[in-house]
Length: 82
Image (cartoon, rainbow, N blue to C red; front, side, top):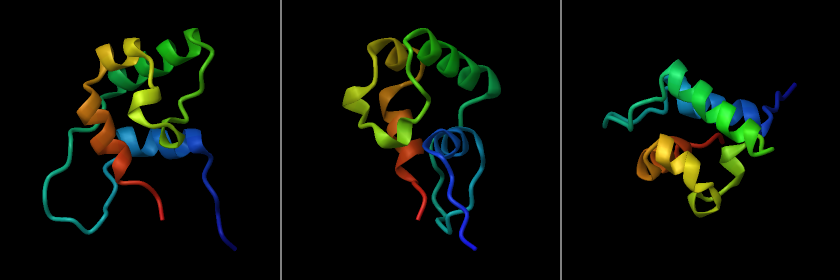
């Protein structure tokens, strides 16, 4: 049986959970619970879902980029799920 994660769950894990991907180099720092809560709150106010894995960083609202550095978001989301 194969489990599938929603885009929202994937984004939450990529941004906040220390996933093991086999790489030895350090990755961008994960979002703290406070940062993630602020991201979700902002997206909710904008009537958006936190399904960030399906968006390019160019599509992200400027308010979000003000909360979390664009390159940090991109690095965290780039790990992806296979």
